[in-house]
Amino acid sequence: DEPTSGLDSSSALLVMQSLKNLVDDQGMTIVSVIHQPRKFIFDLFDSLILLGVGGKMVYHGPVPEARPYFEQRNYVLPLGESLADWLIDISSGRMEPEEVAEEDAITDGSETGDDDDGVEQTLNETQPLVRDATAANQGRGAHNQTEGINDPKSRRAWLYEEWKVHYEALDGEEREIYAVPEQYDVPKSVTKANFFVQLYFQITRAMLVSYRNRFSKIIDSLVVIGAMITICLLEDVVVASRGSDPELDFEEAVRPNNKEIEKFFLELFNYALVPHLSFALKAGLIVAVLIGLQAAKTTINKRVEFFREAASGYDLNAYFLAINIVSTLEHSIQIILASFFSIWIRNPFGSWLSYFVHFLALTWISVSWALFFPQVIPADNVVVVLGFYFAFCGLLLGGAFPPLTYETIYEGGFI
Image (cartoon, rainbow, N blue to C red; front, side, top):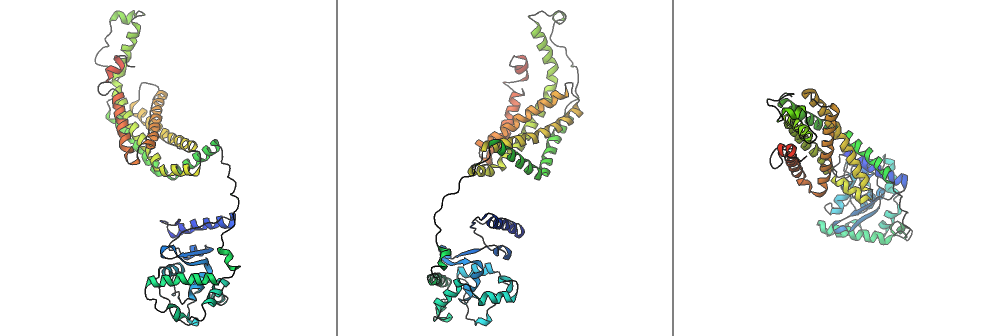
């Protein structure tokens, strides 16, 4: 249904030529509704069904015979006019037939052939479809046929009757092209590829789409890296000591017993950990929101594609898993780059490997939630819901405010 709508002339020709190849190479029958096709596209069609108001038949037959059919009814194709537009004007009833002599009829070779000889042969050696209809109308005269037809509605009614007369004048052999084909067995269903083959092609297609959108992906990555650099620059310099001592007795520190050793190490751990919580909270929260919204955008944009895959009978698990894998890889690369700049600026005390692993785990969790929410929440509300979810859970579980403060989490035995 309107395969060329919204396309430029070059893309429309490419689409229709692809459909024509299916007809020629695989013997498929393709029925297409098309409006105002350019000449090269119109010439690709083998058969034409021209309908008037209410879906009534104005013409049905081979494309090359459409022009002679209407010229026999005193319609004249203006010089330079598109044949397709001319036929649409006729079917609407807005164009009036003219009383012209046969030798005055316009025979523009660009519409029916490559030269004047081809046009003359087309008009003089008219196909049986047109010739027999003309014979059936002999004796009425062009003037008598159109006499009293002064408005589009009347002209359309006359065209409908003309087609009926033309159809009735065809003999049995010529009517075969309009006959309903005999029933035949439904083709055997094609065996679909297994899950892993579909997964491979789905991953390949998703990666190809990502490559085509690489400039948008690069901008998204720069936003994540820029946010990480900004947080690092706004944070204080990392220090190895504090202005106060841990609350431990000298005896416990020198000679800890088995009962007090757990408390001893927990106190030291909390003492060393608290100064670094602010950066972890800010970086984790910003990264989770940015990565989550980017991943959700991918799923939202593919919602229509998701339903199309479902209607086509493909394995939805393979489709969704492929999207999950490609999205996770994309955002993993983003966070590794952002973590590298964070390590370079902050120079943390901990292991670089541990630094990368923690940010990767955060990214994977964010991507998982971002791919889940669009499946259960309307697309218009996904961004708001995800933003609230990541911000609220990040602040609550990060110890920023009651009831789960830093002290509650690390000193009160919550963890």
